[in-house]
Length: 249
Image (cartoon, rainbow, N blue to C red; front, side, top):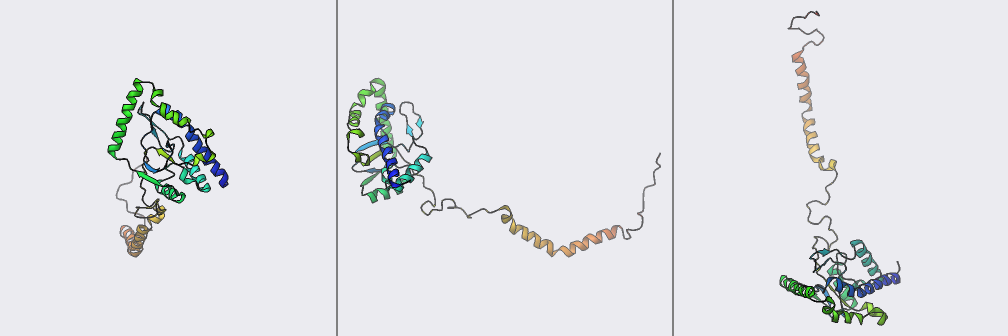
């Protein structure tokens, strides 16, 4: 895919998320607090489509809007177009990579690390808003927000509006994987790089056993032959029968 086609895909992604904010607020209520990397001059606040979202009305978690496969495709196309800083953070777009891209693009940002206290405060705020939603019309609660969103429709603004900085809301917990920065995540923290085949793992013990058998082979052969010599010194002679012969009738 060419750079222009990749840029067109990222543009459509951003426009789709901007236009979907109104329906998101009507369905799920207010946005969760922003966390991670947030641009200082952010003009919009959008839910992060790369992260799961909690429904404050039902208390259940909703899976991300974009699967990991689609996230990987968007990240790949954004790298080709040089627009990786326009994508939200997620499993396929880690914080460290996003910080580097924002720095290259000259976008000033700040880091929001949500503590337990802030999470409790946000949950209390959401609970109060939920109670107010149950007792009043939700259209009255979000009137101011929805009016501001309607004024920022993509069709009424200039073409480069989709490139404006966006504060992506949602808590992204990046997993620390050993050896990820060195590119050896598969074997980091292991005592051996590869377990090997079965014959390779038992080779040392098998060679030790073979050495012992070869060392004592002569004595073992002599012991085998002498054992039969003691039992039957002359094997051609008929054996001596101790029991009396039995008649066939």
